[in-house]
Length: 321
Ligand code: KG4
Ligand code: ZN
Image (cartoon, rainbow, N blue to C red; front, side, top):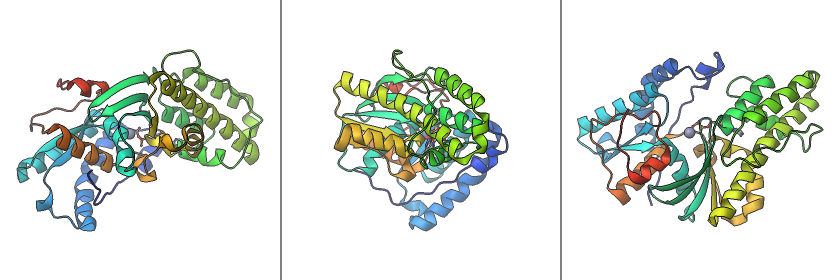
């Protein structure tokens, strides 16, 4: 199994907070500016020399095209200059596989609930590049539901983690939100979003009271977590897969972790805290597995894929955008 020798990350939240969400053009420029600096800094701190690198991994998609192009351009340049192989990785595959890096006893097959700012899906992971999507969202992602609700509570972008921290200061709530997603096949957060917005509109006074605001946060967190857990239990029952993984930014949510552990016990696995939110280690790890198990090497003329559902990997779709 590949081991991690060093990692570094940089957050752009401060840049985008001013605008209340990610501004794609600014995001690409930040990548262009930060990537070479971070790379040099990582080589220094992990005491790795450029000549020690045998393969370079890069996120090929899905995501914002401009940002993907920055990373892919940098990686191609490095691979070409050094004459080493390049491996393009699917971002969601990174989230899905990284719990294996952090939990050496985790084995295939497992069911992965991917909950991030852009994705919410349940994937049956049978092996490297063998994925079957069991459910996915038809509108917002779980992270977006957290962030948009946090915004209604007065938190700045992204807000999800702050909402969770506030919710965890209380043990119950006087506010009630409907149980959602009981019938539909996939995930859908639009009904819940409306219910949350109406709840806050009806209780604007509560926003000025620290206890009541925390109870609102508790009710919101609970409703989102409840919907995720309901779908996860259903998928586990229907698929018969024993091991359960929760991954992506929202897997840092303590309430979600507690309830998943309560339900699945020793069969529940999570990434380390540093590998919940987007990180390069997950991309390097996925590339190492693909290189090792599938001998994947990409050509220097490959394109980025701003849309790239994970199930496409199972049949190695090669269309680029
Ligand atoms: O995976 P990620 O870093 O980026 C994407 O690929 O989208 O996920 C970021 C998302 C954001 O929406 C953020 O608010 C959410 O993860 N998030 C949380 C928590 N920590 C991060 N949501 C709820 N509770 C948390 N503790
Ligand atoms: Zn992500």
